[in-house]
Each structure stands twice: as C-alpha cells, then as structure tokens.
Length: 234
Image (cartoon, rainbow, N blue to C red):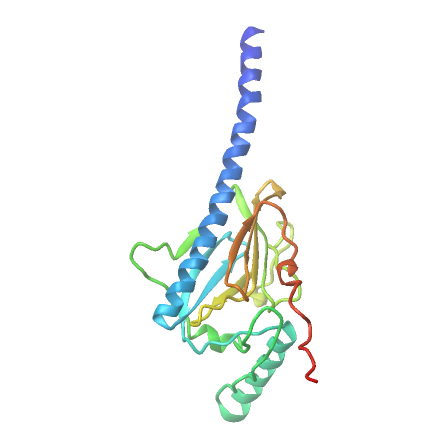
C-alpha cells in the first residue's frame, strides 16, 4: 500500500510536468516559425527573391522554397480559379500560360500563381546554418493554416478520412515577397491530443509584424481596422 501510494504521488506530480513540456514544445515550434518569417522577410529584400513556406498539413511540418521575384499569388479563391482557367485556355490555344491580371484581394497586394506553372519556378532552399525543413514531433500538429487564397482555414485530413490521390497532398503555401511584404497567414499549432491547447502564429501583410498568441486568434481580426472601400474624392 505504501508503494502504491508513492507511485500515485509520483504520477500526480509528473502529469502536470509532462503537460508543461508539451506546451513548451508547441510554443517553441510557434516561436521558430515566427523567427523564420522574420528571417525570410529580410533575406527576400536583400536577395531580391520570393520565398514561400510549404505547410504540409497531414505530415506535420513545413519547408522553405525560393523562387522568381516576379512570382504572383491570389487574393481570393475566385481569382485563383479564374487564373487557372485562363492558364488552361492559354496552354490549349498558344501552348503557353497566360499571365493573370493584377488583383486587390484581401490580405495581399498582388495576385496570380496559376498553380502548376508557379510550382516549376520554386526550388528547395539550401542555406548553411538555416534549417529549411522542419518536422513536427508526434505530440504536435496543425490546428489549421489560413491564407486569403482559401475560403476557409485549411485543416489536416481527419484520421478516418481517406484522401483521394487526385486531390494531391494536403498543402498550403504562404509567400514572402522581395519588397518585404508577407502574405496574410494564420497558423495554429496544437497538442496532438488536445486541439484546444496550442499557439497561433499570425503574419500581418500591412505591417510585416509576426505575432504569437497562446489563444485561438480569429482569422482577419488583426485586419479589422482596414477600410473595406477606398474613400471617395470630393
């Protein structure tokens, strides 16, 4: 009975400690991601290149890729679909993609990335002393990742759902441009066993600021102060 009592005491003391360790782990992942954004922001300006972070939602982790400084991305899902259709028409008619028109979509100042064509422009980043590929431990996962290219925050595929091969990998991209602008991005990293416990990383396009919040940040909340329409001239 004494031995059992001691074991129960050790478990009671150890469980909160383990919880603190997992929490520290997720906070560290969020901090490293925020630092990655800041590093890429300065490097994009210095090198005159475009970076993108490739979030692998199902595998849990991300990698850094570098591409053409003229790379364009969409401001809304509708613009993305329209540009994809335009590119397909261009391939059929002229055997080459057409350039999407500029956009003023929410959260970003440019548009374009016609999907497969843009993917050919990007390669993996190889910089000494910089970790360009990060894999999450099994105790952490994505709650969601959001950019304006998608209508809703994108989540990992549920364990009981089989992803179709034609859908491709469950991946979301976030872009950092040569002028230092960041595509508006919200990333939630949570405990694998408790989706309510985690940290949110938010990259703001207007200020370039990257913040970390232990609470669930509402998508678009930091941009609520921006006017939806430009003022009319008198």
